[in-house]
Image (cartoon, rainbow, N blue to C red; front, side, top):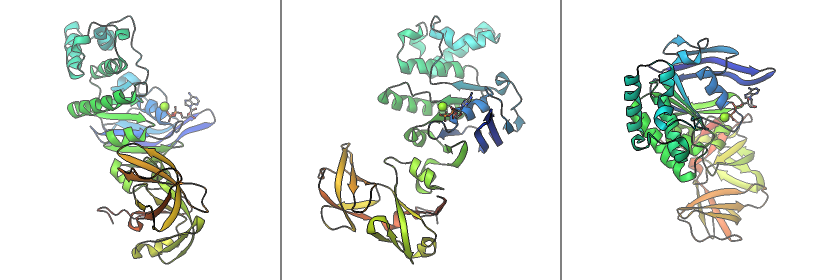
Length: 363
Ligand code: ADP
Ligand code: MG
């Protein structure tokens, strides 16, 4: 129904290369999220798949059939945007059914499809309202309804929740996931928000500068990032990175006079390693003692966790650590940190991962 394959897809606007050779294999029914910093090419890639822009090189196929020369309407893909683009003078019912009506579907069939989409999206009581009499979340549901009635083989979403407030965004996320569970159609969802990506995706495409950095499940990206970019992009607060100055076996000397001894088996990797990465939750901390001593400069208290920003002598960048239920530390307090050597990441000169030591399951 909706297996999407991209082969060396490139897109240039004039002299500017925006999409620089992308290969992707998206399975039928999969929920894939494109995530990456603003301007990395997420929307462009989605528009290429939808056919709203022409590719410069490469090919796009759906279910084995080449579609990159087909008109958008012939690709059987529906797109949902951040701006709902509803017709203000039409009721919800007419907004949802409009595309089908234009396409010449019989009235009874259009009505049946509207009713079914409204039921799925819990819009039935609102069918006769105008968009201006709806909340932001309800409007976005109407926009999704308009996509559903077309029974597309794939849904493409471009930052559909960015206009909603935080609580509503969380609720709509869950609704879209539930919708995917019911429809079992391929969905590609674009966001710059890595939390949205982590919570929604079967698999995530991490994009950067028009290229795929990594395509994997949320947990694989978190535990086994392929490079420093992915390691730093996925996870909040982000991974701490420390320059490695010298290695002797499995013992590392880091910037600012810090030292760490990694598990024995990483000795061979240490000689090539230039950067050590440690996630905020992979430290233990205490008021006294600890492998590294510093001072708390900022506490972000969330109630469930506190993020402590710690200044260490000889290091400009702060280390950020996560303390679950932490209540005790204040700005200016002395603190001792102990990194867990068994949970570190090593990167080479080019930022490529040499070893992800969090070996949960994998070797
Ligand atoms: P994202 O959605 O990841 O924020 P976009 O795909 O919108 O990024 O844009 C990627 C890059 O392509 C940006 O640098 C943007 O300025 C450029 N771009 C997008 N559309 C056009 C266009 N029609 N003409 C020229 N440059 C464009
Ligand atoms: Mg965009």
